[in-house]
Length: 131
Image (cartoon, rainbow, N blue to C red; front, side):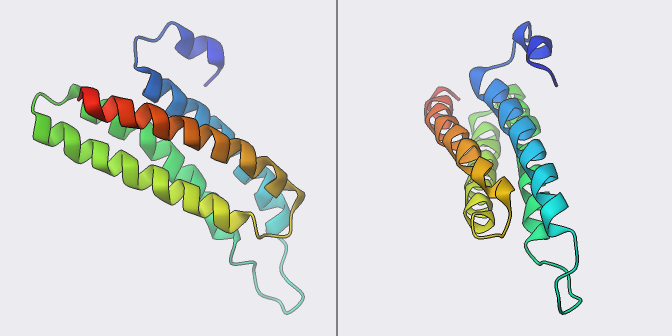
C-alpha cells in the first residue's frame, strides 16, 4: 500500500504504523530470501529462510488484529485482540534478531525494522490504555 493511500484513511496511528511495518518487513524478506534461497554446500536449504516468511506473516497479521480490537464493543474482547497484537510484535522482533545472524547483506536493513517496531511498541502501550 502506498503512503498516499492511507493518508486519507481514518484509522488509528498504530494501524498506520502496522502498515509501514508490513511494507518494510515484506521488502526486507524479499531481499533476504534471494540470498538464502540457494542450497547450501551440503545440499540442504538454509533453515533461516523460514524466518523471512515468518516476519511477513506476523507483520501482515498486525493490522487486522488492531482493527478487530478497535471494532469490538466490549473491553474484554478488545484486550484479547490487543494481547494478540503484543504477541505478534514480540515474535516479529525475535525473528528480526534471528535474521541478524544470517549471511546476507539484507540483514543490514533489519535495524530499520527493529527501530520501527520500537516505535510501534510505544504506540501500542498508549493504544492499549485507550481501549
